[in-house]
Image (cartoon, rainbow, N blue to C red; front, side):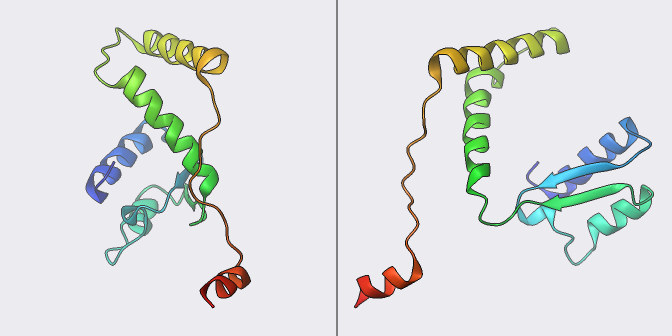
Length: 126
């Protein structure tokens, strides 16, 4: 969900579907995932008995990039333009693709960024 309003609407549905117990929401660093001047998440949590726990991933979360790359691949090859008869059909299709990926398609992703120690940056600039 790209807008705060869409995210609030989604979490309202989640709260209705899961009316009791703690709910942990793992946020990336999208700007709408922060409270903002209107305190949207604080107010949301107060409306729902303070049972939502919002956890932010670290800003330099390169490990998360790998997951996002894989989710993007699954979205393009399995989910986009798909029309499933029911949840079981979607589950079969997703698990089938993950099995195919694991057996035949998986490969290391080529990373273009590499860490340079701060002291090496100074030497290189000199």
